[in-house]
Image (tube, rainbow, N blue to C red; front, top):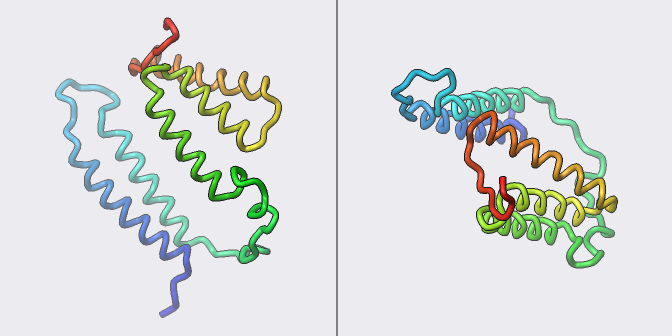
Length: 160
């Protein structure tokens, strides 16, 4: 018997999680009226996809990364808000703020603020392009979800 590597252990944990998720997804009741896409389709597709990806991860051959065990001294000695752990904390706080501001500001403003703000925080300095790309993606998502898929998203301050 050979010893399992880290990828294989992680794949087994993900496969167990995917199997439990799929078992719960099959418990979702179907809508009484016939529809091509029901409420249980997305969870089932997500569970099967995770199970397939876990299988691919199990059979992937691990490749050692050059310098994987080395600590980047430049990243840890920089300004406090730009250290790796501070970036994780700032991103988590930004996502929490997004959740709280989603209804009062609306989907478009809150999502654009989150996307443009985090992109600027992570170092992209062309703010005009950043804002245009963020707003374009958010508006495309908003129009697709509200007009095509009939999903309600909060409008907030904008009169959509």
